[in-house]
Amino acid sequence: MFHRRALLGGAGALAAPGAKAAWEPARPIQLIVGFAPGGGADLAGRAIADAASRLFPTPIIVVNRPGAGGAIAAQQVAGMAADGLNLLVGGGSESIALPAFRDVPYDPKHSFRAIIRLTRQPMLIVARRGGTFADLPAAVAAARRAPGSIPHASSGQGSIYHAVFVLLQQAAGVEFLHVPFTGGAPSLQALMAGTVELAVLAPEEMAGLAQAGEVRPLAVASAARIAAYPQVPTLRELGWDVVIENMKGLNAPAGLSDDIATVLHDRVRRAMATPPWQSFLERTGALDGYLDGPGYQAAMDGVLDALRRAVRRS
Image (tube, rainbow, N blue to C red):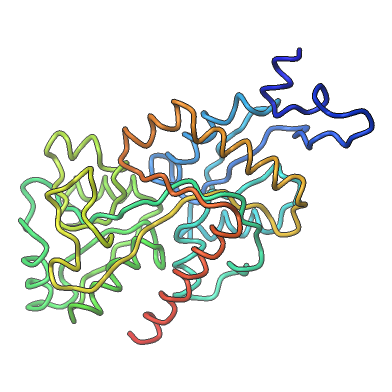
């Protein structure tokens, strides 16, 4: 019994007489993902649920609520009780991109309490093997010759994957044809089926097919090349000043108490040092993006503000 309580953070067994016991969930914790299974948010959610499950006395369950670029899930979580049992796998489209494009039924800066940032996720523009374009400059040139004729996939209208092409179009002075889907996995399926010529994907979403040579990354939207694909140039290197990364973290409904937030942060932070989580990072190419709650919130706010400025200028 002592070993299990120590593993759970010392609640009860290690508390001094009369001290308040640390919060423990009474029911399963739900990690709510706003995108389809197999996409970047889903994979990160399932990986951290697996890594953290042994640190809590109740299961951690991933629930997918895809649609509207993640806004359906975000709205759901924003309206839930602030009891630590329902968390949004956020930090991406629903938090830092969609609210820049249109009104959403929640406040991205005030409807949630940021708990912990898990990853920074580079985003790559990719084509399929045997597709029309061998490199991104060729695709941009084609879009310049025939505006709106080159289809690209994203994980939804106003999603952060959509934002990559919005910023690229603005920087290059061209227009692509946007074809929205409900997540990275459906976007990849559309790319492989030839429905679209280009897609924006996270490294983990395309890792297997890239290793098999079925998809070709053409550019990365990060400030520097990434270790998983050192041969792939940045958009800046290709002449377009576009830098944007996705991020994934856990967000609770606003009003969550400091006690619960601390338990969630500390145990998830411990989970990020475990072999299952480290294996996820190595396997997928996602980058350790740890930030505490306030740092995570500031990072989201900064990207949202910058994208709002860019959208207003377009």
